[in-house]
Structures are given as structure tokens and as C-alpha cells.
Picture 1 (cartoon, rainbow, N blue to C red):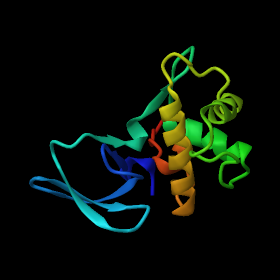
Picture 2: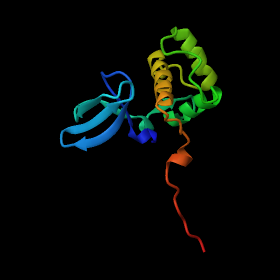
Picture 3: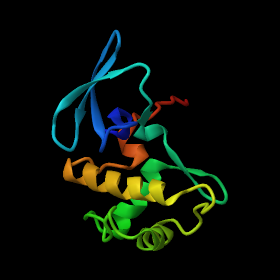
Picture 4: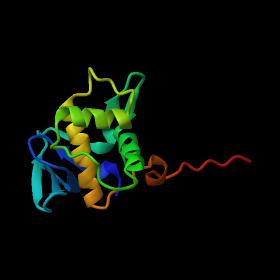
Length: 142
């Protein structure tokens, strides 16, 4: 499952897997406890594949940040917790992404990224490589 089916719902903890769309919104399943929730169209929802992190040069897709964490941690959970002190999380994030924009990326963002990575890992969602998760474009040149 790719990040295009994983959601963050404002006001609700953790991440959600998109199950189905309804007339009034959609149904999602929590990756924390497996409970299903109905989310209305007025809710503030973010799809993980659409989120990017500000760096000094560009906006880096969240999938690339997760990939950098995965490489650093050798596929394991992060060495810092989302409950650790702000300075410890910022130092960790600086190791992952040394050129992140400290004026635009807040400690709360770093906390979410660390928490989300660990939730995805616990649920077996570890394929962050864009090339593998998206179908290849076929071009015929003769």
C-alpha cells in the first residue's frame, strides 16, 4: 500500500487508511487501533503522498524523508521517540535532512514525521520508493 491511501485527519491522533468514499465523505481505518471512522467532507484531511517538507532549496516529498529515515535506521524504528525533548528531535531530524528550513519546519512537524514513520513501520508500510509504488510509463520508440 502506498502513501496515497494513508491519511492524516486533523483533530484525530495517528494515521488512517482510506477504505471507501461515501456521499458525505469517506470511511477510514485507524492504523493505531483498527477502528473505523466516518470523516466528513468538511474535515481537514491530508494525504501523506501530497505532503512535502521545506528545505533551503526546494520542497522535499514526505516519502523521500521517510526513505532517508529508513536508510539511517536500517529499516527499524527511529532511535528517538516523538515524545522526546524538542532539541533531541531537532538534532535527529538535522542528521536526516541537514538542509531543512528551520524557519518553516516546526518541532511539531518533526514530531509528527517521527511518529508517522513509526506507525507506518508497525503496520508493514515500508515501501517509500516512488519508483516502485507508481506504475511505469510505457513509451514505444521505434
